[in-house]
Image (cartoon, rainbow, N blue to C red; front, side, top):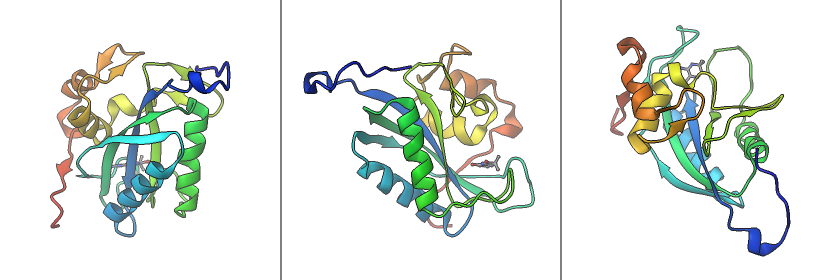
Length: 179
Ligand code: ROI
């Protein structure tokens, strides 16, 4: 966990790397992801470094729902993990996400996947995201933009986790923008 020791502006160059998973399967999912990225990019102390391709992925959990569009964004941030999580939650809420059904359809879902190589367990936050190693819809876009991103619990890179994933969990079709 990062602890802010001082408000001295000279200490302000402590930027952290974070990876965010984005998903949507309602109301023009690609536009939802565009909008989520736009909003994240406007947050003070958050800079979007890279956004992966958008991938069409079959739903995991409740199967009887539309395919998702998923992506991963690499961020540079001065925010502490809990503050970044608050930002993700706020963007979800402001974009009108309503949690109706567990594992059900969603307008926009923003997950904090990795924060530096820290292991964080607080009542609200588990980082690395516990489901990340089993989800092709996370690992495919993550390995695209950051194959060397490191999972500090499993001590493996994104590329290694993806290589170990069962083929049926890897289904993620790169979205070329004309479907
Ligand atoms: N399935 C896919 N393909 N993509 C998601 O982002 C996603 N998110 C979820 C559940 C409902 C578990 N399934 C998903 O939260």
